[in-house]
Image 1 (tube, rainbow, N blue to C red):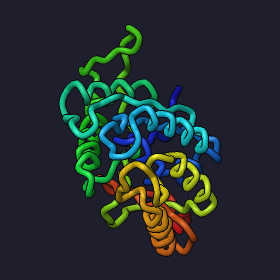
Image 2: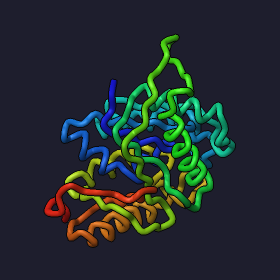
Image 3: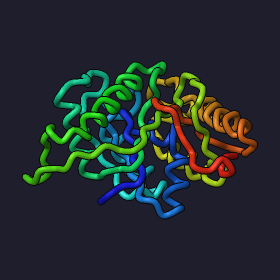
Image 4: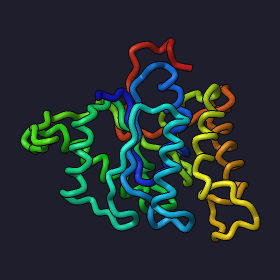
Length: 239
C-alpha cells in the first residue's frame, strides 16, 4: 500500500491532537492516509499500553485512515540510534508516503522534539540506496518523501503553513475523545488528574485551532512547521 500522507508521531493521540483535521480532510478527498505511532505510550500517567492501543484503534476508525501501525519503541527512553532509525526506514520504504508529518521540533514533552529529530534523520537515510533493508525477506527500494512537516503541539511555534480544517473539526474532536483514559476526565475519576485530562485542555485545543484559523479567515485550522522553504506553482491558490 502506497500512502499519500503519513502522520508518524511518538505517542498514540499525538496525531489526532496535532493533525486530526488534516487527516480527516485528506481521507475525505480520497487520499491514502496512514498513522504510525512510534511508542505505545506506556509511561502515560493514566491508562495502560493496552487501553491506549484500543483507543488508538477506535480513533483510527473515526478518522477513516487506511492503516495504523505501532513500531513499539520505548516510551520515554527511545534513542536516535541505528536500530530505531532502521525501524522507521523500513516503515517509510514499505508505505512510500509523499508527505510525512511528525512531532514538533521543540515542545514541553521531551519525547516530541526527540521523535521529530529521529524521524527527520531516518527520512534522510531512507533515501540512501546503500542502506539495505528488507520486508519479508525481499530487499526494499530506497525512498525519501518529498515533504516533511512538523506539528505545533503544546508549545506555540509560529507555523510555516496553515491548513483550513473547519469542515473536519468535529471528526478531529471525536478522534481525540476516543482516548477516554486521557481526556475530559470526571472530577471523581479514580486515576490521577493530569494536564491533558482536565476538561479545560480540550477548550484550549479548540482555542488554538480557532486562533490559527483566524490568521487565514476561517473558523478552525491546523498549523505546521517545515525544515525547508516551501514553494508553490500558483500564487493565486494561496488564501
